[in-house]
Length: 150
Picture 1 (tube, helix red, strand yellow):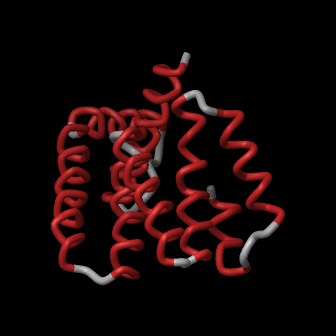
Picture 2 (spheres, one colour; picture 1 turned 30 degrees about the vertical axis):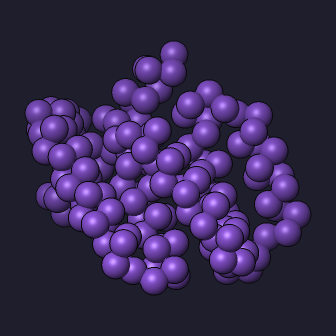
């Protein structure tokens, strides 16, 4: 079931990428299937592009100040979240730890939200729900939109 859910999510993401690239919605079901077929054929290119963007950002980590590093952890996690859940979790967690160390509680909460949003994909539902519940009690206004998005 878990692999099936991930596969469906991938197809939806790939399909929306192709639709966005064409800048218009398909006019018929057959056109939609054709776009989906193109997305499936080009899936390796989409995944490779995500890995390349993440690799580029990882190279910036050592050259950045603390605030930039926290944002890079978030962006790298965002890139990986659609193609490598384990790597996404790793970078979100690094951001959570770093933000706590430097005392940036707003970014800490934001990274926790991002991390919690992908935990159910790994089957860690209870911890994700508990994380959301604890964050909801002390939600910073700056993270309100992100909270509802994730």
